Amino acid sequence: MASSPYSCVLWDVDGTIVDASVGILRRLNVALTHFGHPAPTREQLVHWIGPPMFQSFQDQAGMTPEQSAEAVSFYRTLGKADGYTTDVTTYPGVTDLIHDVHAAGIPQATASSKPENQVDALIDHFDLRADFVTTVGATPDESTLASKTDIVAEALRRLEERGADVSRPVLIGDRHHDVEGGNANGVPVIFVEWGFSDAHEGDDAAFRAASVDELRALLLSA
Image (tube, rainbow, N blue to C red; front, top):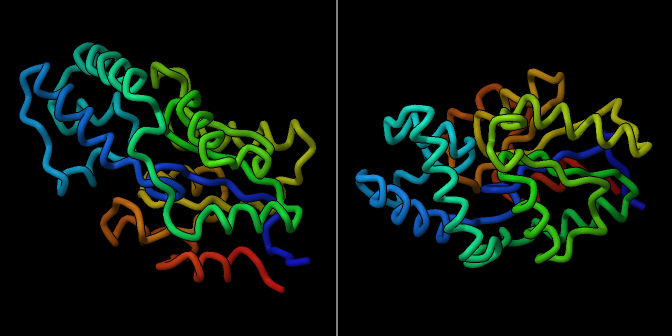
């Protein structure tokens, strides 16, 4: 059986496990034009995917917190109607690695800024439920539990509550929010380079992985 230097593994979802960019861009186009803002280009998606939408509507569209809350509600309604798994694909090889980490006896959890009900839908859709001890995401309003720092802390809390060893955790993510959230909790971060990010966002990560094979080598050894 393979072994790992880590006692548990936390996974970001968007840009790390799944590519949901097609649906996100479509819903953003509808939501932003509905509120009188220009639709983003695909190149601008790097600024939207990863952070909580409540923050992105303020940072990227210049909305007030009140306007952003309304936009998030509208966007979530679109997502629910669309189906949370529509136009979502997994990055090649990632689900196989998740299966192998589970087979090695290493507890896993998600630590995502996506609303938790959407995380659950994706985990079930891609038949990953058995691989995760717990799935953690943001609250639907993205206010009670939204920052990556708090989400990582909650993932560790739930893992420990379920009997997992959290003494040597690692977080896998693709945005600077993941790096900041991991570092704030004393969790080393493996920054994966296939998501929606600028290269400099991983400058403070413990490790980088440009491919799933490189990530596997960091997580598992024969």
